[in-house]
Image 1 (cartoon, one colour):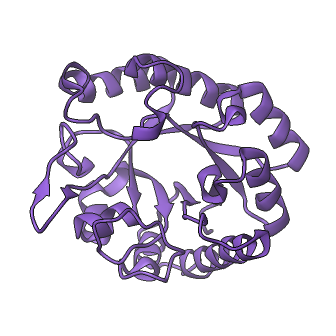
Image 2 (spheres, rainbow, N blue to C red):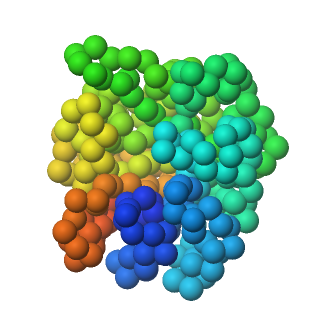
Length: 262
């Protein structure tokens, strides 16, 4: 049985979370991942509950507001933001909170991050799936901007996320990372990249990360977590173009994640 395929609400930006639910329902996505961000709806559990019920699309994950542009969403205290993300996930029936590792300048947060994530999972019953990031490349040299580090396979997290666009920037092999993580790989951000320093979040198959091979690997090893399409559609000319990209991404996921293990 193939994993469920979800749609991240950030995939329809600059349209709203409400539009994301509408696209997901119309195109046949199985679930939604809510990116808590500057869209006011994404910050309101009751609004998301109403959207989920109206469109008949369940929420599989909540992405905590830990990006640079969401640093002030739900306050500035990082542990409080994660606790609030867990509360939202629990209320929505989602089992996963996606979280990035701390920025290097968040020294106290970074120092306690690994143990703190484990403690949150124990106290909330929610899986905090720590996402792979990447060195920041201003030139040929990379700068380590995340602590304890950008590669979650280097730490003893119980649950992790692989994002293919981030793997492309880091020039890391996502299949090798998946093998290192084994059963600790809980969540996938399906997208693509070309290996540039820019976080491209291309439609899967349009980059060079080997997205199809990655999905076939997951199918072969019996991955039973969530696959969530997280692409950038900001350059789409209109809603028809955006819908086409979202449909192509869903079809790509269904085609390659459905390969049966042998």
